[in-house]
Amino acid sequence: MAEGKGVETQKALDDFDPPKKPKTNFYAFGCAILASTTCILLGYDIGVMTGAAIYIKKDLKVSDVQIEILLGIINLYSLIGSCLAGRTSDWIGRRYTIVFAGTIFFAGAILMGFSPNYAFLMFGRFVAGIGIGYALMIGPVYSAEVSPASYRGFLTSFTDAFINGGILLGYISNFAFSKMTLKLGWRMMLGVGAIPSALITLGVLAMPESPRWLVMRGRLGEATKVLNKTSDSKEEAQLRLAEIKQAAGIPESCNDDVVQVTKQSTGKDVWKELFLYPTPAVRHIVIAALGIYCFQQSSGVDAIVLYSPRIFQNAGMTDDTHTLLATVAVGFVKTLFIVLSSLVLDRVGRRPMLLSSVGGMMVSLLTLGIAFTIIEHSESKPIWGIGLSIAMVLAFVATFSIGAGPITWVYSAEVFPLRLRAQGVAAGVVVNRVSSGVVTMTFLSLTKAITFGGTFFLYSGISVIGWLFFYFALPETRGKTLEEMEGAFGHFGAKSNSKYKGVENGNGRVPQVQLGTNLST
Image (cartoon, rainbow, N blue to C red; front, side, top):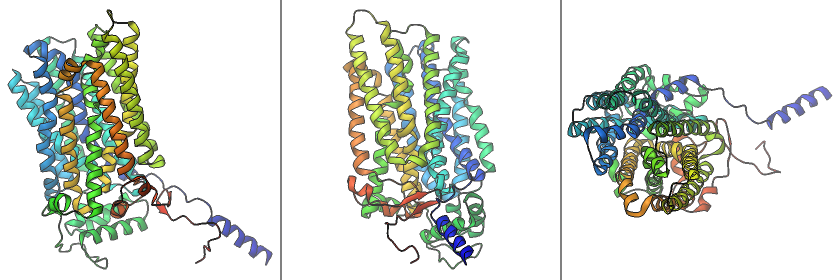
């Protein structure tokens, strides 16, 4: 009898043990990596144009305004791809949309590499921009839809990791081809971008289709197989399937391999539900998603990355080789901190990391503004100015990459309901690229009008506004399944962010219990 009581006591104690963290699902891991590689294309274009612009200006004899337009216009070109990507991905599927994106960018890279003049180069960037627009929209959507909730943030954050990886590759390409002749060097820098796009296009053919898209098309048998491979357990796969079926309007009792779906997500009436007649929750989601996309770029990150050689030169650095090496350091720091962010995102949560990140950006930009104000009012360039400018640029990209960079793509991809996800993310990418285009196409003009110091003060002020917006408008989403995400929205203000009091484990959410609660009921 005593032995039986001992067993019961041990069993009761075991009930209080924390649940074991699920093992890494390497299949879902591989799918998310392949999908996110599309974002290398944007990163490579940003990175390679940073150095290539120096040689393009010398070779083609163009002005600073033409360089601003050349560097920033691709963000506006990408709007075409982003606007089309939502409908395309609902029509042909997430996987083949990724293939389409890689093919378009491949053609754009070839055209840029063979550009004989400025006009032809702009046409090549137009084609590449459409491919980038497709890639930016579809990569995060696919990753979010294929990932289990336990580490969806980690897998979806690969989007920004690969953007940063692409930037680093672009910097390395700048340095590798900088010793070639003036006419050949920058063309090689741009043309080599066709290689990663070709590899990506071939690699994604090994991925399965998104289980959510398959269910929306009535292909339940295929969706079940994918969910079994990408979930932490069979039970989770069944739960995810049931939630997706409910969102698609398919009865839970229906288990046929192929069913007729009357509530297909083809984009019809989606825009009305998003912008004209939204529910309070959907309105909150749209504001939060579009806001985070806007403030991510309005902080000036693309301008600082694209024009980092110009920033270092105005701080006092004169040697082109040293300038390019400094930009490579920027790429390494961005990549390092985005990897760190990916490792802790699902443990710490979206809000704490985002608010800390934007706070660090504010301080870095403010310090950079003070440093350049002193430099610009000095008769000679003080040696400390070079060191401080490099340190603050590195601090800015580090704090950006640990929060605002990756969380933007994670958050926006997971908050939209299934029926609105493709078009919602597409709208967010449009806002993101417009913001980036405005910033990159006005940076040099701003520095001439209000000085470098004044420009950095302006970006710091925008970051302050962004921090306040994130604090009051963005609830925590960590641990929630995509189908229950809508319930977290609809209430603005700091109090709404603490509305959910659940304790999260590796598999999702567990309700809190108060001391004295009868656990057997």
